[in-house]
Picture 1 (cartoon, rainbow, N blue to C red):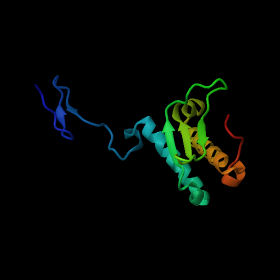
Picture 2 (picture 1 turned 180 degrees about the vertical axis):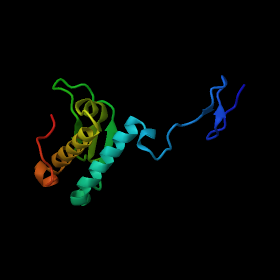
Picture 3 (picture 1 turned 135 degrees about the vertical axis):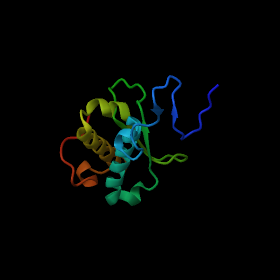
Picture 4 (picture 1 turned 90 degrees about the vertical axis):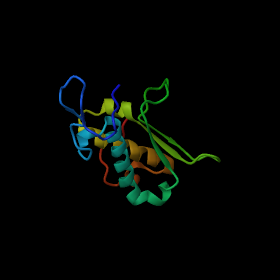
Length: 140
């Protein structure tokens, strides 16, 4: 029986060479797609928070893989206002966003637009007030 100590490099049992990560942990390729997506959402929230940070302090931002089934199509996000026992919440759905955005820049832009749209919905403000630098139409 072979025991493996975490973080230690070893040869695999068939002698194919050292086993371990191919990329250092600080490079983008070393993170999973979901981790990269989480970072995009965090960056978008941070950008919006520069103007609206005080109004967004009590808002939870969550990333989920897929939305619950809806008859009206597949949403990219959900903005839930606060209730008596729950804080306000923004949910960004990773799979629908990724399927609509082709390429890294398009994904970054769409994530930002989805976050802006959810914040605008929560705050009851127009999109261009939430993000004065935005351009384009809101996502479906």
